[in-house]
Length: 458
Image (cartoon, rainbow, N blue to C red; front, top):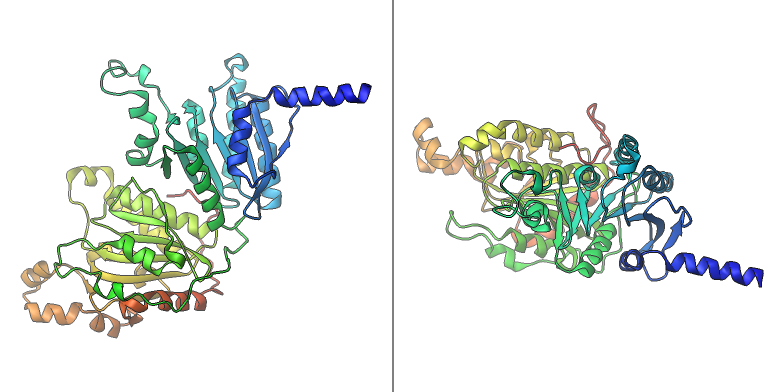
């Protein structure tokens, strides 16, 4: 009977834990694969463990109360295991904040957490899922991750609206300040936002499938799509009206394996499109112009390039840019600085880099979009491309040249003759041409003096 009593005591201990936490673990991991670690640490209101996601080992922690020193140490142990084993870490954020009774020791708790995240940056992928409160110092935790997912119940902000005199209850609510929509479209902290928690966790699983387990592994999978597939639609995707916007999403999905594109920051800086596709089974990071370049666009593009570079993911850019958003606000906030940082980010990336000029490549906005001049390995252009130091009207006014002379100097054949474009390709052949180029670049080895491991430098 003694043994049976001990078993019943164990079952009772397990049943007292938050069922909501285990429900989230079931959504994240493959069925029956989650194994809890440190289950009997009663002073740490966090569930930690590991499991399998699509045949990959993944570590995770699920907050279930206040953040204390014991809470932080338990998560730190999971980080230690993840770094040793070279496996991703997923954190599910839903905390009541720091444990006030611990006083100054609360900073020790957060110091442990944030230090572990910093050491793991660029070594193993880190994903945060904000499903509840994540405020004050806790808001640093997801921000140090590579990717942040938020659901409708998620709240992420530094200062509560109740501390803003005359704001709460009038113009700004908790949702307006730190809800999933605000963090997706305004601050840009949230990379993915959902009103369906099940879909949120499903997309976390999908993102993990795109990534290698660590910075020493190459993300390669078997493809069932035809690597030589052509799409005649691409021959007509560029509109006749030069002022009309190109449907870049349709180009990206047309060239991707199985037409699948996982877009990042969908609701932030829509003038740049960023995300991941697979080409012949290989994960590729995509950055595509979708309007004028501004500060938010450079940050969005730079963050994706840094993450790709940290985890050996090749980069594809689709260029169609005529310049920058012109405003006093952009100048005051440092568009010059952020433009320069994007140039550095592309130039410093040592993974294979390929650029396809779709239509416009005008001025120095073209320079920073992974051009040959700052280190792109291969640059292709469609016949519709126009590459120039400045726009047509400015060139004609300043340089005193005719429209005919401008067209002769800015067409892709002229620029290719100078060595800045490697080939002019038929749009319908884009998929097979870039797959071939990335295959050729797969053994690329390049080391820069400024190379770092962090995936969140921008």
